[in-house]
Length: 305
Image 1 (spheres, helix red, strand yellow):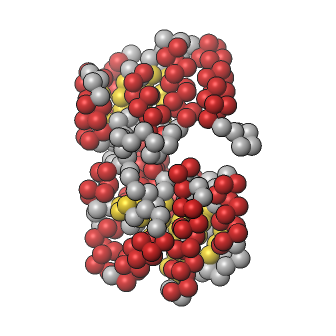
Image 2 (tube, rainbow, N blue to C red):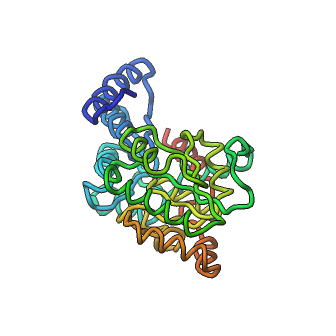
Image 3 (cartoon, rainbow, N blue to C red):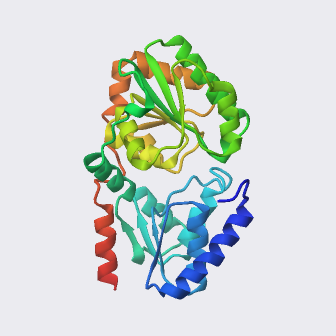
């Protein structure tokens, strides 16, 4: 990581450094996960070396190349150069087929993020006492960090949080704040020092998973959280207008609400006030797998070797 690094710098760095790793390790297959610029560039690097690429979490699409940006093109590109497509859902499988890729190497596996979550919750439960949360209050977990939410959107999110805390004396908001100054500076300015709003450093995965489990409602612009939280029975309100995970919307485990302050307040308030609406989302079935995606991927690679 470099301060204020841009996508050109990041992409070129990943390309050059993975070239060295591939030349030294001589892998039979390179696996990349998800839709980060690192995954895209590592897939391209392996392609240049003529090493087969397996894309874990293949086939996600919004069909808008600028939203989320640059993730939509990252995952399209990774799918285009990879040999093995490990898709989490049937809709992801169909997305890949529609792009003209042969079904021969497309496998529906579920998503490894569910494997990681269930394993972590079972084996690495974390005592969150160090966060100094009030156990008598309902906890709303907030994560917001995406580039498209820089500027006015993050300001609107912060405004909504202030309104919700003011209107509901029985809630507290926990926000692990991303270190990017485009997010951090705005959040500290608008929410810093406010009663029942806990701005904390970014959390390692185990405490974050435990925090998800202990939260009442989750507000997020994250892709992974849209998949994880429903496995814990937590309603997820997504601070975006589109998602590459429409299966969760269709199943009712998540709801797209955008970043308008009034919309955020209204949707959160509904979940706080209506037990039936809360239970409708909390008890919906998670479409992203049963926690055995990694086993399936390993079995597939063994058979291919």
